[in-house]
Image (cartoon, rainbow, N blue to C red):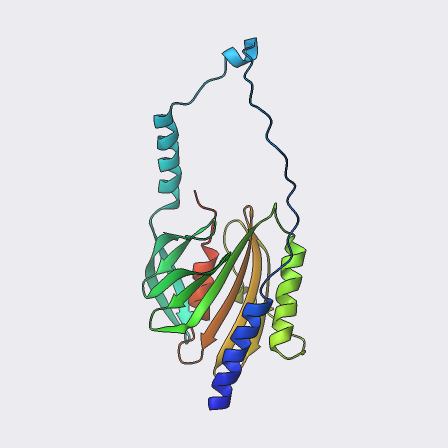
Length: 224
């Protein structure tokens, strides 16, 4: 059993080391002075008062909502919980989080959504703007990472759509799974709005919370 725990810890470490992905170089340019020239067209431009802008932002936030009911499976049993809208401190997204889980920054551009009862059960969250990276690169990197932790064996691609993120705005879902004696490691990539989302779930057989993490991961969206 001690060897198994060491193996699972090693797998977690390997994934952490290989999680970095290539991104497109961002072009930079110097800002030119903003010289405003009054023309017939600019005279008719409507300037939105600051109070109106705040009202618009408040309306968008209300559309997202502060609470959301999430339904997920644990050991074949259906559970339903109220999740709270939580914003990442490190990345440009918010997520609906069920009580008993905490979201924290793990390292630059990576967050950890972990079970408070056992922090070894967690989901690593990485979000990348489509303007900064290629979906193909992120998806291939995930496959290579999963292959590394299975010691060169072809990672098992998830074929069951129910085990992949679903919902409005989600597309190009792909996932891989690795099973060990004490638990599973699941790697998932999908697109939503202007984000490429990469999730790595570390679960233990004693908890079986992969579906709970998946349902929370589906709610990831850009900050409003």
